[in-house]
Length: 350
Image (cartoon, rainbow, N blue to C red; front, side):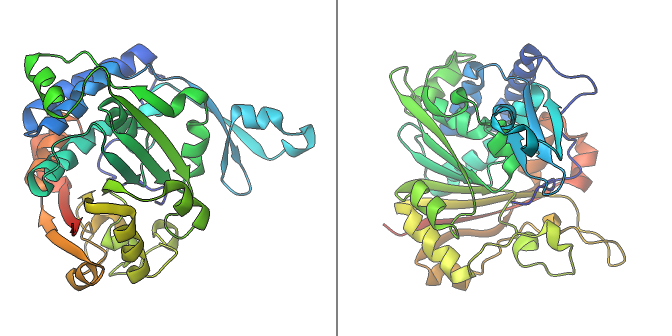
């Protein structure tokens, strides 16, 4: 969960001038319209339809420590004694930062949901428990909660903890949205979403599963563990020399991580690693750890932990590129040469 872009070729969120809340919502709705023809599952359609019910994003003020790089929300800074406020830099964030943060559109999760449906047999979001490992933005957990899911996210980035520190950022979410058309409404119904369903957003700060307190707070019994652009072989087990600041230290060895992942999931629960990557650098160029999107764990390790491996390092370039075009990351030709994707899907045996 390092604070580095998962796909540097994808433009960072944020126009030259601060976006208004209305403009941000309009952008997300336009993106949902563009991605909708690409998805094949009811759960992905329901996820996209939930964009219509997203609350307006807010401008936020954060403070960054000049010494440590950690962030605090504005109200936490205001509570500090005057002598403790030295060495902090004020950061004003426009409304677009709320849903796009540093990592781009939250709707890039739509393809991962299609994989969960087609390969993992997940057909309902209402009542499902999700853990988004390295969530990066509240957007996906919020959309899942609007579909009736109990959506958790965990990350080590204090920027996110500070950004989502206001009371309305987490908690119960009423799963109601104005579906854009009859097909989307049918998809919502098929995914178990009704106006009577309530989802929930819970965000955790810390390293799972190494931090005991975080592991206890998150608990067990999840239907889906989803890691998008976080658990990459290049981050965890780089094949070439890399800047340590761009790597992920799991805090435990591979066997322990997988054992705790197995315990996290309910019987039959799914673990999906979905990674979108830029092209690998040439032999004489600085290597980008985030360009190797294969599983950091081998088949033998997955199976030794008790998982049924449904897919290992499955190539998904074409679907990721089509989604990239729809989200405005670049032209079809640019995506052909600039975007690569792999996924690994495992199931805890019933």
